[in-house]
Amino acid sequence: MSTRTSTESGSAGTSGETYDGFTEEERDAMKERAKELKASARRGARTAKARADGEAEVRAKIAEMPDADRVLAERLHEIVAASAPDLTPKLWYGMPAYARDGKVVCFFQSAQKFKTRYATLGFSDLARLDDGALWATSYALTEFGAAEEARIAALIEKAVA
Image (cartoon, rainbow, N blue to C red; front, top):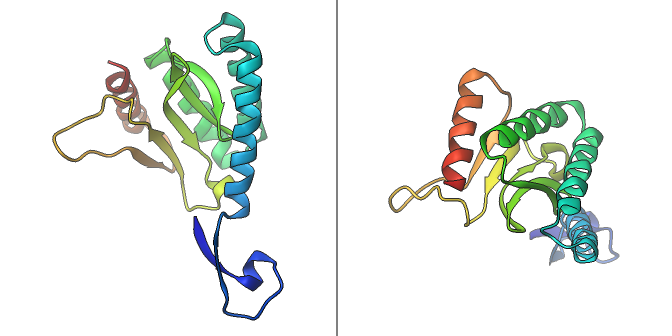
């Protein structure tokens, strides 16, 4: 959640008032998540049709992204498919995600959609990335070279091991 002034949130009121609520981007993501849950309930999360539908939905969402995010998301999609073919592509809060038994293991978050400096590759608590008492659960993505692709493939493989 974010704190905004009343003029930033578009509501009437005196300048300087704060509003602790969700940003427009956060509200949009929640609406998309509600649609995803309804669609998933209709088709069943673990069927072959769910996998095919998820693949098509993820590819369509990636195709809608601005060029910088689209290039990263397309390459990440390929890396996940090659590194962990048992993960099922699906949308999660309107972003590409990859699940095992219907539960998200990792996901891509667009920089453009959330108006951030960089896109991210995130991991849920189901990812087996534990490394002592401290480890990263998300990574900034700005471009892919051979070294980044190898590191991401290794992270994905470890996450599902």
